[in-house]
Image (cartoon, rainbow, N blue to C red; front, top):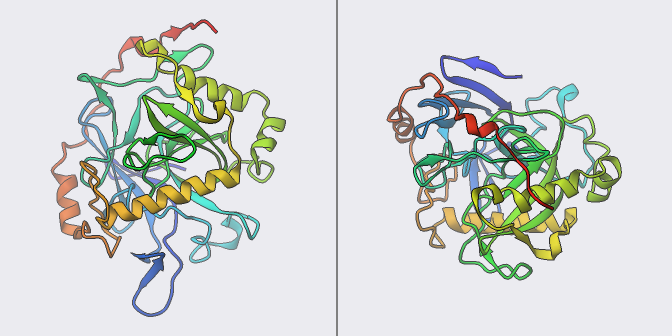
Length: 342
């Protein structure tokens, strides 16, 4: 449920930080450690929606601004054991791996919203190309995005790494994820998802993985545990997903996208290994062990990162952004149908 918080803030989701341990108040994951605090994630809008200055910033319930790219944990499976009633806990098997997903684009919408990887605190913004806000075209019979679309935090597709399977480098972004659940989410919402598979899109010569997942709050989540389950219970859904990615740029005058593995969707185990590798590249990024170029790694909680900032510095980033305003009008051509030959 979405609740208003002040004039331009809202509760986007209820998630929890890493498991508590006695001692120094930190929990270690691999070579990095994170501040361990149970938090609610809130979002705060700045600027005018449907304009180039619109931003969605993230913060904790106690008002600390954070980066959705760097501060929200990737792994969510062990995060719900504290401070949550047993009746509210997501039921899962012992070997189930859950991930946090940052929703950038709600299903059925057209605005190409994305985490601003090159800006401090990495708010969500609408992509701009050649001075114009980007909207995804409606390729018949689809309307906008056909799933909730977003990213897995604390992942990075390294543009200097050539994938052994795709033979292409990463696209310099967090790994993308499509939530095939029935609920339409909100931009900035953080949900827990179960990974089912992954598509290897080759976008303008770069590897652009598309993880297929389902919101754990979805009524069908317990029944969908693999790509085969989706094929059986939702005939045509995965084929439509591949076709959507193949054709979505054609109305803009670009050729059809191509895929590794001939467009076949790889299974859950393969997908999780891909995610783990992008998490490893992200760790190197925030520890300054690799050249991230223009990527902004400002964060509040990755305690071994040289890019860690103070609460005051994070607050200054947000307060310097334009105040929240009335939405700008959406161009009428965004509703246009595009009919493409097969």
